[in-house]
Length: 171
Image (cartoon, rainbow, N blue to C red; front, side, top):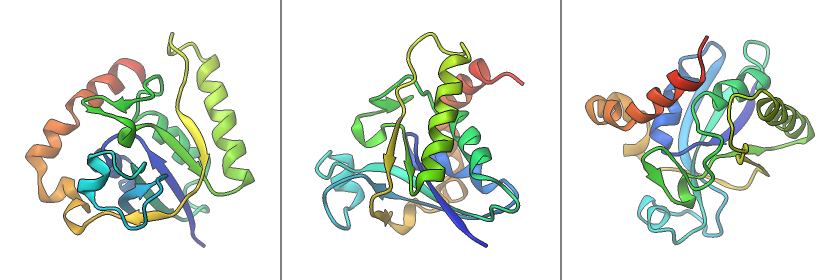
């Protein structure tokens, strides 16, 4: 059995590892979604020419890991109070979005967002959007598994994200 989930939370390089390390995850693909140009390139997306945001498409076994669990992992990777980027990545192509494919995913994401807003963890409003799934375009090969191909740069790219997570997601 397979399901899919699509999340945007800043640089797609940084969004792969939190998910691909979980049991039940079959694949995590970096790509672009939410825009108006077919088959956009990285250069077009980065130049804000397409309306797309960087995102990850996760294929998972719902009998091993639930969509609810994926949404919880998602929150812990992002700053849900920053609508115009994530950490050092600025602009609408890095905006935080949970893309939902059906009523079940919408209900889960909405309830989770409401619970986060009521938790008191953040003093600013939760601005992460919940939007319908749109066509997902796989990013160029050099973006796939970036953390394995460029570990030093990946470490630098994730520093602010890790600091934020440690401050807000104490367990």
